Image 1 (tube, rainbow, N blue to C red):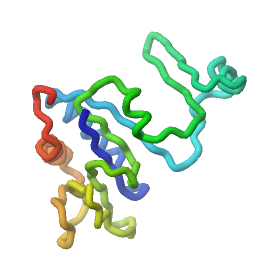
Image 2 (image 1 turned 135 degrees about the vertical axis):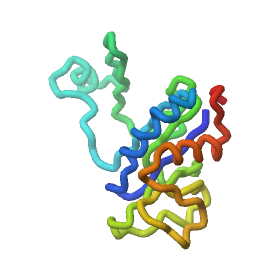
Image 3 (image 1 turned 90 degrees about the vertical axis):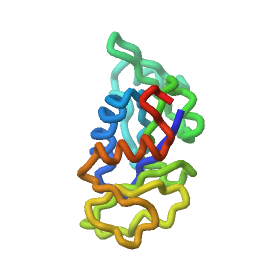
Amino acid sequence: MKILAVSGWSGAGKTTLIAALIPLFRAAGLSVSTVKHAHHGVVLDKPGKDSFIHAEAGAREVILTTQDGFALFSRTQTPLEALLPRLSPVDLVLVEGFKAEPLPRLGVYRAALGRPAPWPDADLLAVAADTALPDCPVPVLALDKPQYIADFLISALGLNKAGG
């Protein structure tokens, strides 16, 4: 499995870009999974539901399964390297966030946010941006051209249409 971190400041468009890239990778014959890191508290289950009650009673992990799929709920903070083996094998895992992880990285940058640029970063493959970045040490890809970004990433990560 190849892993690509997609990171940038809040509001830069990471989730929107990932949502545009997934169908393009799939159209190229690649299987894709994602891992999303959130910096704020999120309620993973609904209070009052049986699965929530199981967790409240002290279950370490709870799996809720339906005809449409399943969800694993855990109340322990888990590092990325422990989460990745839980995924079924795929060609590419996109991880949103995880700025501190030493992973190949696509930076997402919007000038209007007024935040610092996403370099220097030794793991940075490219930056998807809404403006020219003449001082950027890696390729700058137009944020509004997801097909071009997908093609660049397939090549840069050594992926191929046969699922390699």
